[in-house]
Length: 131
Image (tube, rainbow, N blue to C red; front, side, top):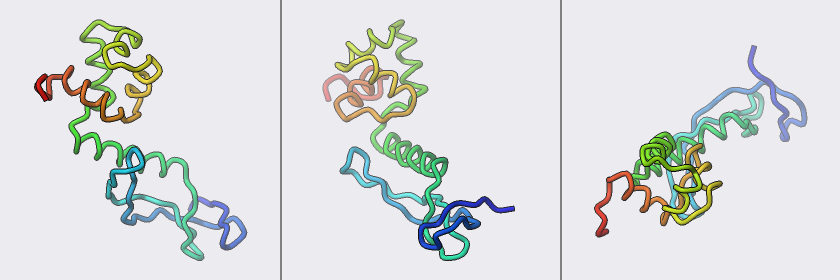
Protein backbone atom coordinates (compact mmCIF):
# COMPACT_ATOMS: atom_id res chain seq x y z
CA UNK A 1 0.00 0.00 0.00
CA UNK A 2 1.48 3.41 -0.96
CA UNK A 3 2.37 5.95 1.70
CA UNK A 4 -0.04 8.76 2.33
CA UNK A 5 0.65 12.46 2.87
CA UNK A 6 -1.45 15.60 3.16
CA UNK A 7 -1.71 17.43 -0.17
CA UNK A 8 -2.29 21.20 -0.01
CA UNK A 9 -3.74 21.17 -3.54
CA UNK A 10 -6.21 18.34 -2.91
CA UNK A 11 -6.76 19.50 0.70
CA UNK A 12 -6.73 15.96 2.07
CA UNK A 13 -4.53 12.99 2.75
CA UNK A 14 -3.65 11.22 -0.51
CA UNK A 15 -1.47 8.36 -1.72
CA UNK A 16 1.94 9.53 -2.84
CA UNK A 17 4.77 8.17 -4.92
CA UNK A 18 8.46 8.90 -5.26
CA UNK A 19 9.59 10.52 -8.50
CA UNK A 20 12.92 11.80 -9.82
CA UNK A 21 13.31 15.25 -11.33
CA UNK A 22 16.22 17.55 -12.17
CA UNK A 23 17.04 19.84 -9.27
CA UNK A 24 19.47 22.58 -8.32
CA UNK A 25 20.82 23.18 -4.81
CA UNK A 26 22.87 26.26 -3.99
CA UNK A 27 25.72 25.45 -1.61
CA UNK A 28 26.55 28.41 0.62
CA UNK A 29 23.78 30.27 -1.20
CA UNK A 30 25.80 30.74 -4.35
CA UNK A 31 27.27 27.73 -6.15
CA UNK A 32 24.67 25.70 -8.04
CA UNK A 33 24.84 21.92 -7.78
CA UNK A 34 22.69 20.13 -10.35
CA UNK A 35 21.43 16.62 -9.65
CA UNK A 36 18.46 14.32 -10.00
CA UNK A 37 16.39 14.74 -6.84
CA UNK A 38 13.93 12.26 -5.41
CA UNK A 39 10.67 13.85 -4.30
CA UNK A 40 7.30 12.71 -3.04
CA UNK A 41 4.41 13.61 -5.37
CA UNK A 42 0.65 13.43 -4.95
CA UNK A 43 -0.70 10.45 -6.90
CA UNK A 44 -3.84 12.43 -7.72
CA UNK A 45 -2.72 15.95 -8.76
CA UNK A 46 1.08 15.59 -9.09
CA UNK A 47 1.89 18.27 -6.49
CA UNK A 48 5.23 18.08 -4.67
CA UNK A 49 4.66 16.83 -1.11
CA UNK A 50 7.16 17.42 1.68
CA UNK A 51 9.15 14.37 2.80
CA UNK A 52 11.92 15.01 5.35
CA UNK A 53 13.79 11.78 4.58
CA UNK A 54 13.92 12.43 0.83
CA UNK A 55 14.84 16.10 1.33
CA UNK A 56 17.68 15.15 3.68
CA UNK A 57 18.99 12.57 1.20
CA UNK A 58 18.87 15.14 -1.63
CA UNK A 59 20.84 17.66 0.46
CA UNK A 60 23.43 15.02 1.38
CA UNK A 61 23.87 14.07 -2.28
CA UNK A 62 24.25 17.73 -3.31
CA UNK A 63 26.80 18.32 -0.55
CA UNK A 64 28.74 15.22 -1.60
CA UNK A 65 28.87 16.45 -5.21
CA UNK A 66 30.15 19.81 -3.95
CA UNK A 67 32.75 18.09 -1.73
CA UNK A 68 33.97 15.99 -4.63
CA UNK A 69 34.06 19.00 -7.00
CA UNK A 70 36.20 21.01 -4.55
CA UNK A 71 38.21 18.10 -3.09
CA UNK A 72 36.86 18.74 0.39
CA UNK A 73 37.42 15.78 2.69
CA UNK A 74 34.28 13.83 3.56
CA UNK A 75 33.13 13.73 7.21
CA UNK A 76 34.68 10.34 7.96
CA UNK A 77 38.03 11.52 6.57
CA UNK A 78 37.89 14.72 8.63
CA UNK A 79 37.29 12.65 11.78
CA UNK A 80 40.07 10.21 10.84
CA UNK A 81 42.47 13.11 10.17
CA UNK A 82 41.72 14.70 13.55
CA UNK A 83 42.25 11.38 15.31
CA UNK A 84 45.44 10.64 13.36
CA UNK A 85 46.80 13.99 14.55
CA UNK A 86 45.85 13.00 18.11
CA UNK A 87 43.65 16.05 18.61
CA UNK A 88 40.39 16.67 20.41
CA UNK A 89 37.71 18.63 18.54
CA UNK A 90 38.89 21.69 20.49
CA UNK A 91 42.53 21.24 19.43
CA UNK A 92 41.56 20.58 15.81
CA UNK A 93 39.34 23.67 15.89
CA UNK A 94 42.34 25.80 16.85
CA UNK A 95 44.21 24.50 13.78
CA UNK A 96 41.27 25.35 11.52
CA UNK A 97 40.47 28.69 13.13
CA UNK A 98 36.96 27.77 14.21
CA UNK A 99 35.23 26.42 17.30
CA UNK A 100 34.81 22.80 18.40
CA UNK A 101 31.11 22.87 17.48
CA UNK A 102 32.08 23.56 13.86
CA UNK A 103 34.48 20.59 13.89
CA UNK A 104 31.70 18.36 15.22
CA UNK A 105 29.37 19.62 12.46
CA UNK A 106 32.00 18.89 9.77
CA UNK A 107 32.51 15.40 11.20
CA UNK A 108 28.76 14.72 11.03
CA UNK A 109 28.07 16.04 7.54
CA UNK A 110 28.14 19.84 7.39
CA UNK A 111 30.17 21.26 4.51
CA UNK A 112 33.07 23.42 5.73
CA UNK A 113 33.21 26.95 4.31
CA UNK A 114 35.98 27.62 1.76
CA UNK A 115 38.54 28.93 4.27
CA UNK A 116 38.22 25.83 6.46
CA UNK A 117 38.07 23.52 3.42
CA UNK A 118 41.44 24.85 2.23
CA UNK A 119 43.01 24.17 5.63
CA UNK A 120 41.47 20.70 5.72
CA UNK A 121 42.86 19.89 2.26
CA UNK A 122 46.32 21.03 3.37
CA UNK A 123 46.16 19.00 6.57
CA UNK A 124 44.98 15.97 4.59
CA UNK A 125 47.84 16.45 2.12
CA UNK A 126 45.72 17.06 -0.96
CA UNK A 127 46.91 20.66 -1.54
CA UNK A 128 50.52 21.84 -1.45
CA UNK A 129 51.25 24.39 1.32
CA UNK A 130 52.10 27.16 -1.20
CA UNK A 131 48.59 27.41 -2.69
